[in-house]
Length: 232
Image 1 (cartoon, rainbow, N blue to C red):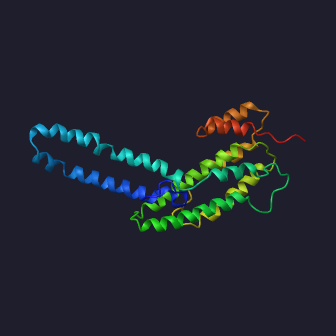
Image 2 (cartoon, helix red, strand yellow; image 1 turned 30 degrees about the vertical axis):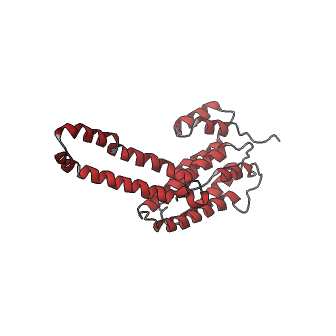
Image 3 (cartoon, rainbow, N blue to C red; image 1 turned 120 degrees about the horizontal axis):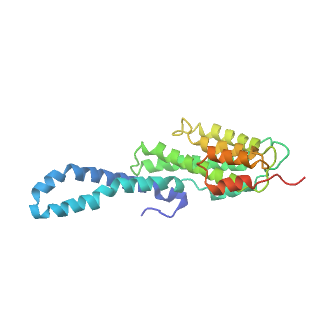
C-alpha cells in the first residue's frame, strides 16, 4: 500500500514515478502493437480500436507531464520554512555573524530527500528520475523563498545583504549534493532580493523593475513594494 498521504515517505513520490513510467512503457508498447491489433480484429471494430488509442493511449504523455509538474511540490515541505523566513529579523541594523535558521532546515530537507530517493531505488525508480526530482524540488524551494520574502513586513538597509548571505550559504551547501550540479533556478530568487533596494518614493523605477521581471506574480511584487523600513 503506497503511503500517498505520508509526508515522511514523500507522499509516495517513488511509487508515483514508477507507476507513470510503467504506464508510459505500456503506451509505447500499445503503439508498437497497433498494426497487429488492427489485423486481428474485423473491419467493423477498427473504429473501437481508434477510439481506444485516441481516448486512452494518446493522453498518457499529458498525464505524465501533469504528474511531474506536481512532483516537486510534494518532495520538499516548505510551509514551515516560509513561516521561518517571515520571522527573521530582516530590519537588523547589523549583518548577523551566522546565516538564518531556515537555510539549515532547507538543507536538511534535501538530505532527507536524498535518503528517500535511495530507498526508492529499491522500488524500481529509474536513476534518470533522481536528478529530475531533485531539480524539481529545488525549483519549488526557490519559488517558496520568494513567497516568504514577499511576506516580510519590515525591512532595513541591510535586508538584501542578509538575504544574499543566506542564499550564498544555501547554494554552497546544495552544490555539494548529487543531482544539482550545475545549480539551477537561483536566478529566480536573487533578482527579487535586490528589489528591496528599490526606492519606494520613485514609482517609475519600481514600474520599470516590474516590467523587467515579469515572472513574479502580482502578490509578490505588492509584498515587495509594501515592505517599508520601520519608522525611526
